[in-house]
Image (spheres, rainbow, N blue to C red):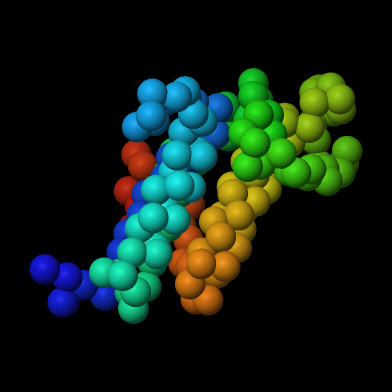
Length: 143
């Protein structure tokens, strides 16, 4: 069934970091933690032992907006996210107390999420994970 498959595309919504779902045991669990668990099961499955993986982190545009309201650290897996933002990179009309208004917050946060998945993947497989951050409704981003 998988003999001609060379790469597995695994998609994760960046917006899942503050969302919850019921797991198989009936517990309310953070969706990003469920993504992590499912990702771990897939990449360690013997069927995919020699295949490359591409992680697609989707909904970047919505994620940027979401970060203005909700800190990435609300997900336990991301509790150590501590971006350094220069006050010079912020608009003078925006309070410097809220770093989420930095135009680079979405980029820093998505890079952080990508690195978390890359480290997890490397620890499980000793291989490199390829990651792409996309806006699902932007054809150029998806291409």
